Image (cartoon, rainbow, N blue to C red; front, side):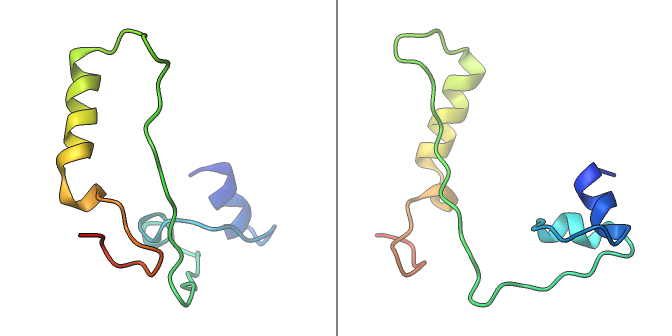
Length: 79
C-alpha cells in the first residue's frame, strides 16, 4: 500500500486516486469528479539521443493507437 493511500485510509487526509487503486483498497471511499476530469500526457526524450528498439516500438504504438488520439476541448475524440 502506498504512503498516500495509507494516509487517506488512516484518516490523515484526502487524495486523488485512479479508480482502480480505490477499488482494491478496503476502507477507501471514492467520490467521482463531475464532470470527469482529464489529463494530457506526452512522451518526451532528448533529441538525437539513442532510443532502444522497444522504446521506438512503444512510440509507434502510441502514435498509431486510437485510444491515444488527441481529444478536443469538449472531451470528444478528434477526427
